[in-house]
Length: 240
Image (cartoon, rainbow, N blue to C red; front, top):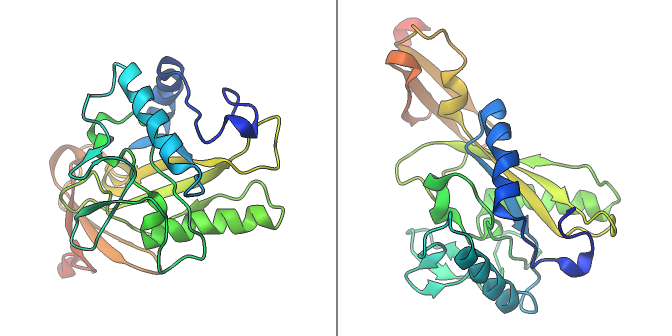
């Protein structure tokens, strides 16, 4: 917010990458986080083309990002995914599960293994949208410090099952504190969290993680290596 102190600076707002990464390196390590970054709030169609042009100009000027960042089979642009995994150019933000037609693209990002998530419209997926909508509902009712967490989700950047959770926090410019302009997105992978929950010599332990939507099982092998074992409760029954 402090790099873009007025609502008029948004959604075309970026934090200089050197400053962005300097802060994130410590936070990611302390919090056992996969990634953390900004997600601007766009109201299509008025914001879409302008933000997309701004975003790709920013990527081109930032040496950390590869030249093909944010490029999908259809070309450049904010994307969503069909159930079969095919990407589509999301220009409208329309869904069947939210009253809001908004775009919330993943923008600035630090985790290099997550670069394929850049320009993904978080609000295009049901459970991410529910979290975002809950923050926006609270904001509309005057609650400015509401955050939300998704249930277990599969990240678009992970080709193999690796359950994660996202947290979203509201962003308001310091000089326009009553205007919601975007979100901070924090990514937790459960295998990383669980790897720190046991002694370094532990192995052969199953973890069952559940929320009100989904249940999954992880297993730990050598050297705190935690892997996805399967959907549901598939822990070793001899240790009930």
